Every structure is written in structure tokens, then in C-alpha cells.
Length: 512
Image 1: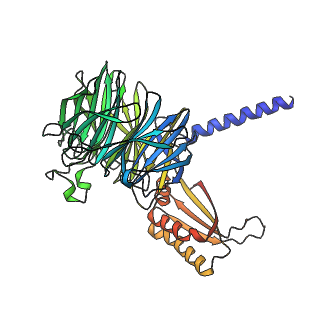
Image 2 (image 1 turned 135 degrees about the vertical axis):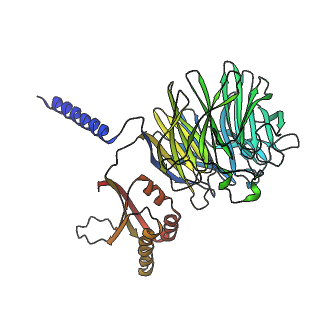
Image 3 (image 1 turned 45 degrees about the vertical axis):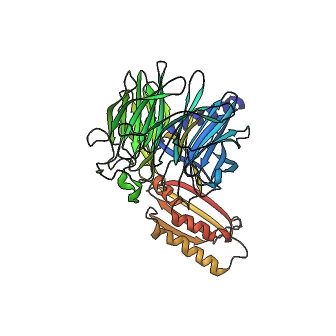
């Protein structure tokens, strides 16, 4: 056998071994999990909203916080590269509803500036950076005050932007989007006792047999409403469904999304129950009763009306407390995969919706930070990603995750190894303080099951100047995430960072 044949055979054997290993390590593709790919610093104080957009074959992520928007490039490996940051009108915000779309030959990002009481129109440049083209201010005839949610509706002869929010006199407004990104008012409907438009934090659009329907959630008035949208952007109410204690969970209705499976159209609704809010004066209707957490599924009938269909109730095996965002990761004819971001459970829960409209839980990842509104699903080729951020003012991070078949970690522990090199001018007292601070993490973060450390004693000359090694043990991925984004860890990094010359981090899984 010649060398070429030997090499080809060797490659074939390696590929076969790798494939077998992957099968052994991964469960069914129906059993998905989140695996962190990257995290980058944000320029602002926090991340409240996240959206993404593909332009010219490039993928961009927009992270909006208090006073600004950060722009990143996202590559096919889930790695973020910072591009630019942009100041919001009056340095207000936070940037809540953010939606990107194409209008004629231009790409725009529309931003609901919550406390600036304006909708900002930004042109997305070829580099991904933003250029503000228009400001639409609140008036007595519109409902843009404390604007939170935006939804674009494309019709045959024009495109429209629907706006909802939390102002004192709430309602739903529609604007036609002009070619330069400016907004022209079409219609506003004032909230009343029948419709659920008081505190619209979620909206979704279904286009069914040539007709367009918009669905809104009312955070303050605890329910969902459906509207028929006409070609000229005008709209009328179709039906309304309120919270109850039996077949739906809508107290504090928050995220709203939808999917179509075969010929069935579904709207999926989550909530952050009013019981989770500390500020009593923030909730208008205080006569609520806590009856649990759950995600509600509604069918859409032939008239576009919502019909209660199924509820997935939260239990000890799920993380659904304080839902703030539901993202659709993937859809085929038989099922959809969804991700639920939570503020109170500080987690991302993966769910599956089958064509019968039944939700079932898959896996969840405890992120270690609360998600307020900042969760976005984005696919590049065959790869599915989630981009997440937190409104925590001490975090300053944007995080990406790959959605993949779950790897079997049974009977394994995770070792997290940190090698440190201190600056030459770091004093012995500073180094001693840093050592003690690192060791103290064991008592501050319960997910650290073991921590050992030591000072380099090798005489081989290959330590490259690293002097200290800390080895932390976790039971699972959840523990590592909670540690990584825990306030105590972030405080440590900020404290010892000025005296660190270099750091090398490696993680590996080992048998118990």
C-alpha cells in the first residue's frame, strides 16, 4: 500500500473514531442544550434589549441599554467583534423595542427610547454602524410615551411600524415607514376595559391566507388581544382574552411570539407575574392573585381570533419564573424550538412546540444573570445562536450561545483552571490580597464545589512567567456560568485586574 493510500485510510479511521465519539457524547438531536461561545464588554451601563440583522452576507448584533446602542459583528463561530457605539436621543432610554428591517433599498433599525418618549430611526450602514435619520416624538394623538415594543408589518403597498408602551394613557399606534426611515402616523387606538393594550411588552404578526393579524400582550391589564391589520395600516380589534386561574397564565403578560406548523398558527405568550415586582406603585391593578408561572399557547382560528389551547406550567424541572423574552430558534413542519429568557430564575429555558400545539421542556442553562428583555435568536447557515445580555449594571457583558445536541456529562466534574502572572511592580501585599480574594470566592459562590491553589514550583523553565494557579471544580455547566457572571467574581476581576500582567484559563471535564 502506497503512502497516499495509507494516509487516506488513516484519515478515514480518524473520521470514524470522531463520529463514534460524537455519538457517544451526544444524546438525541431532540435533546438540545446551550453552550457559551463568547462574551464581550459593552460600552454602556447595561444591556436591556438585543436584536440582530443580516446585511450583505454579514451578521450584526445591536445591544441597547441605558443611553446607548452597541454594534457588533457576529461570525459563524458565534464570536462577537465590536464595531461602534451610538448615543440615544437625550442620552435617555433604555433602548427597549428594537427591530431591524429593509425599506425599499435601505436597511433600518428602529428603537423605542423608553424614557426619551421617542421612536428613533437609524440607517444601518454597510459597516453595520448606525446613522440616525429621524425622530418621532410622542404627541397627544399617539401612544409613544414610555415606548417599549415595536413590530414591523410589511404589506403589499407599504410597511408599517406598530408601537406599544407603558404610558399613563396607554394604547396602540401604527405609523407608515417612509423610504428615509421617517414615520407617518396612521392610526392610534386608546386602551379601554375590553382590549389588552395597557403596557404592551410583546407583539407578534401572523399573515394567514392573505390577511394580516397583530397580537399584543397587556402587561398591566393581564391579557392578550388580536387585531386585523389592513393594507393601509389601519386596524381593528378581533378578540381579547384575560388571565384566569385555570387554563392560562397572563398576570403581567410579557413576551409574545408565534409559529406556524403545517396549517396551524400558534401564538405563545409568557408573563412576569406582578408578584415579582417590589415597587407596589408600578402595578396599576393590584387585585391579582399569584397562581403560578407558565407559558400559554393559543391557536388562531379562521377569523384571526385567539383560542386558549395549552399551558406548560412551571415546576421544579423547569426555569420559567419571571419570563421576559421568548425567542423562536428553529421551525420545521412538525415542531419548533423556543428559548425563554427569565429575569427571576436567571436562566434560559429551551422548549419544544409540536404541531399539535403542545409545549414540552428540554434543557435549561442557568446563566448567572437576569435577562430583562435582552435575548435574541440568530442563525448563520445551519448554526443556531442565542445572544443574551442583562440589565445588571455591574455585568457589562454581551454573551453568545450555540444551540447544540446535549453532551452527556453524567458522572463528570468540570475543572476550571486559572493561571496568573502578576506585573513586576505588584507589591507582595497586593499579591497576598489577591490570593485571599480568590480563595474567598469558595464561600461567596456556592456552585464552586472545590477550590485549590498554589504557587509555581516548576524548574523546567516552561512556565512562561506564570506564578499562581487556581483550580475550581463545578458539578455542571450551570455552576461555571453562575461563577463567571457572579458579582463576587466580577468584583474580584475589577479589583486585581490592575496588577495582572497576563492570564491563561483552561477548562476540562474529568470523571468523578
